[in-house]
Image (cartoon, rainbow, N blue to C red; front, side, top):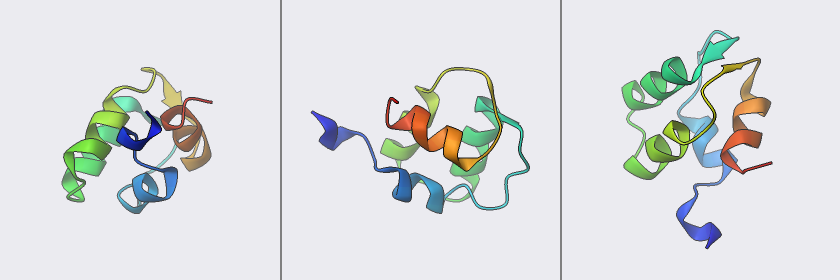
Length: 65
């Protein structure tokens, strides 16, 4: 079941250069701009819509923690 969620390391590859705090929309747009595959973008679109303080918060949201 976990196989359809990209791991946080994969996700972070596409999030370099984001200025935090960042909204979910900003994070999704940055990933798209960086050429992230659909599974990464889908995972980011599924995280709660709030401000994220940094990459760790995004990773935790993606991994469902």
